[in-house]
Amino acid sequence: MVRTTQQIYPAREPAPVRAAATVLLLRDTAAGIEVLMTRRSATASFAPGAYVFPGGHIDAADEAAKRIATRRPTQSRVQRTQAIAAIREPSKNSASCWRTTPTAAP
Image (tube, rainbow, N blue to C red; front, side, top):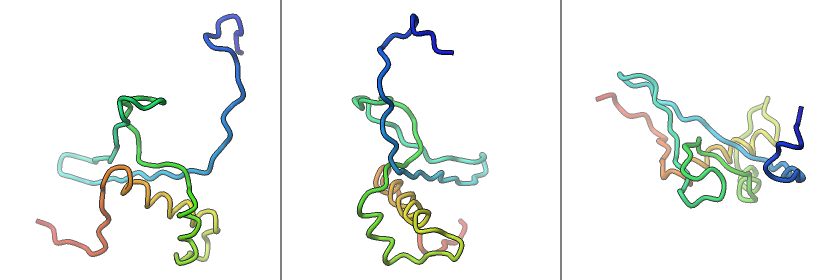
């Protein structure tokens, strides 16, 4: 139950929902599972300095890219656009790169 007498800030309308996507990149190492996370800028207006998973909103480029992307039979158009955004966001936010060819183990 909300206790209106104990609220720090006045109530306001919630932000509108936006389509977004994120991805968890995992790597199995001898020391255990590693997870790719990025750190938000210390000057960010929301959650400054927080560690977060790469991700973000779906933009027009993601929507346009789905015209040339292959869709699985069980995947909807919306899911394909979300997958495109989930692939784009980590490389944009963390300068990660995607390998397209397998590499030999050291």
